[in-house]
Image (spheres, rainbow, N blue to C red):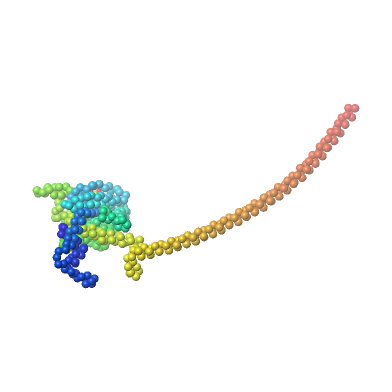
Length: 438
Ligand code: GTP
Ligand code: MG
């Protein structure tokens, strides 16, 4: 194992080329042979020691319908009991539950995060099932990118939560993939390493399983779904990986129950008709999955996540923000140039917006002025009209007053005349009475 890590590191660092003393004349690099031991051949060991000291982290996402056997498989894979919660079939939307554990095997520490879907496939609308998963994966990439873009980065002690492997649990129907499976895997294949597994493979017969595997693979190919292929570039594992690629999707059985088989206790599922042994390769592909996922390709899964999936996310994100490596004439553009160009673009845009705002303001003022003038004119008109009405009313009242005054004076005259007549008649009547008495 240690030897494999060293080989891999050597390959990455280009030591094979350096130590092989091949002259790279194209780049003008000369190779020299050493007269004696110098010591830099210990670099791979130094790296291994450093990695062991730092510890590793690995994140697995389990996608599958409620009750398909996700938690049982995780417990079986890591030979432990993780915290498990049974999900209900009535979740309005898919949720993701992430739990992180610190594990240790020999002197290697592993920070393992197991993310489980809750309520996957229980919704009427398929988008409600896969979208939360897509969003979760993107969120982990985004927080890594944010850490990377910080001025004070602390990536060495940053808890990397990017998903390294996605176990997609296929229901053992023996029929075909569901449209939800295809849509989800298609949405995820550029974001994560998908390893499809046929869950509860003890419920399907051997011949049906064989046909089912072929059907699944052909459906994935015809729908252009890219699943994770075990790598063939490392010659130490190329052979086993080639064979295992041919066994995909792995048909798995999970169980933490120990059953006596012969004189040994083995992990198995016991039925009235027999025992399904989890670690028996004639019964299921559990051992193949464990070998491929944990023992052989864990580091490649981590590497692919960083160099392929995260790189794609980062590139799209930075391009969205307007950063690019080359200009329209394919000349390299530095970050400083992009920043300056963006700043200039921003200033021009700002100026344009300012001018627009100013013009709009002037226009609004003019409109308001015209409105006010109209209102003033209208008010003036109404005032004139009222003034006219008032003058007319005043004249009419004055005329009325004059007529009343005339009436009043003629009434006064008539009253005085009546009073005089009355007084005269009274005087005449008094004289008559006196004469009669005499
Ligand atoms: P949720 O988290 O509630 O969505 O369920 P899950 O997908 O984690 O399923 P879980 O592991 O809780 O298993 C659900 C049931 O399926 C349990 O009764 C398990 O014993 C059973 N089960 C798990 N793995 C297998 C398997 O490989 N074969 C069979 N036949 N049953 C299994
Ligand atoms: Mg579960």
